[in-house]
Length: 117
Image (tube, rainbow, N blue to C red):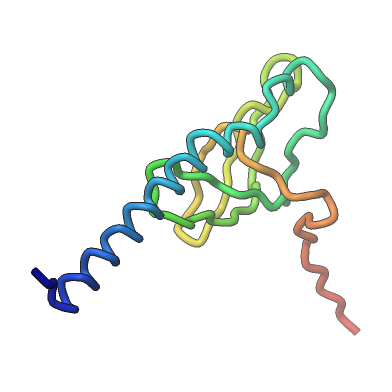
């Protein structure tokens, strides 16, 4: 019994989509948490600052969706550790925990300087 080319193509496409979904779910569940250091509240690390460029991870979002954002406001706790930040993405401003991934400080957003001559 032979399968028509259309059915075989649909099955192959469905299998590829399932494999991609499985890879993405494991990446978000197993690898992404390793990027956020578990000891960051016990070791001195560079806190997030206004203007830092960060990556916001949405575990329940679509595959390959890593929106970049700019930190617009930081909220330190009583000890001065930044626990929560406001970030601006293309979709708006959101409050997120400070476990989001930060880019190296060389990628910090610089304020615009208007020079009048």
